Image (cartoon, rainbow, N blue to C red):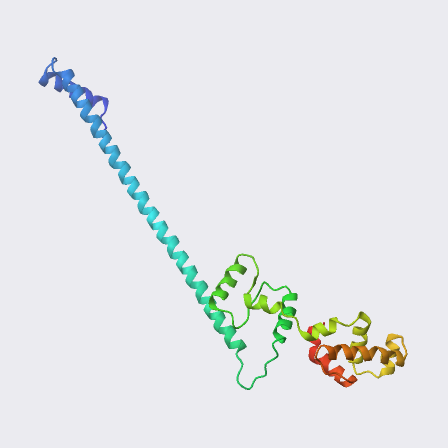
Length: 233
């Protein structure tokens, strides 16, 4: 900005008065004032333009920084998801000689896991996108169950259906009979006679057979209970 002190303005005025003369001095002064005003506005506009350019540069740099940070975070999440997926696949891979459970074993195991209240449950067949969604959900403070897990949790084990068909007393009798204790001890624990115990045993075996389990003896009953205990508790 053009800045003139009082002494400089006075000196210019004296010189102008001598050179130009008193008649023309007012008109020249107005012209000079107008030019000085335009010059000041021009300088102000240049300064404003420079300031805007600097602000735009700062915004561009800030945008680039935020964009780079977002990309780095996305790459980190994808990398972690890939590593987790690989680790999960390696941990759950079965060789040709390994034993696999029935189609009802997984729902029972998942129900036990879900009852513990974990933040997320996935299975080895879930996709990479599912793993990424799981990480994002848990990171946001939520929980996550994959679609495969939700579908599996809706499957009810036939052994559980058979057990639920028994009365509360019959369930108690079944557990004690499956404990390999002699009938006299089972009857004593139930505060009933051995003949009454036999009366309970018969309908229990019949109900199990009605649900497709070929159980005819106390030994077979104990074996059935041992095989399906995980879904009966």
